[in-house]
Image 1: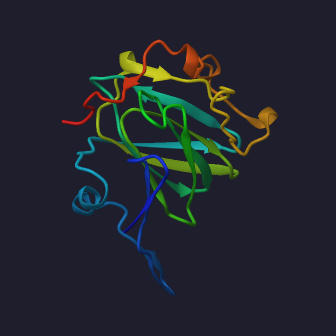
Image 2: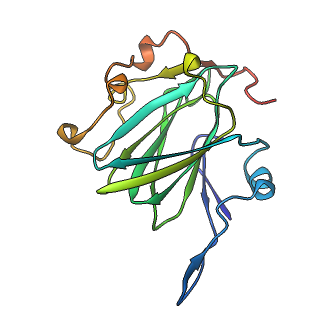
Length: 190
């Protein structure tokens, strides 16, 4: 597996080694040993999967401590634009984001550490999206930011009129209005 660093420390892409022949292909999608060697020490405790159609935009979500989550995300069918926004007050990259195209073709995985808001937009007719979390889902600790916050300036690669949102994702606050954010100096991992 190859590590691809981004301009925000800790937010990385992982490119698996693919072995293919006339029968198809094989790759190791996750190895705890390799992940800890390349990225960080963490234990994933929950796997999730979603299926969405073109234009669906989910995010920008996060969970507050003590249920903050890191995510390791990938696409098994289709293509998405995946986005991680730094919401750690005091961080040199606060309010900046990293985006990556994840697809069934490139088989890349995107690691989003604790302290980041996360979202994705479906760019193909359909997408099946899988992700590992290192903490359990806790609805009372949910937080979110507006997907269309002009201060973030995220290009979701979708025409605005084609964006499909859940009711909940229609009414999140902008980053500058957020009452609760992570502290850059706070220890987010044990």
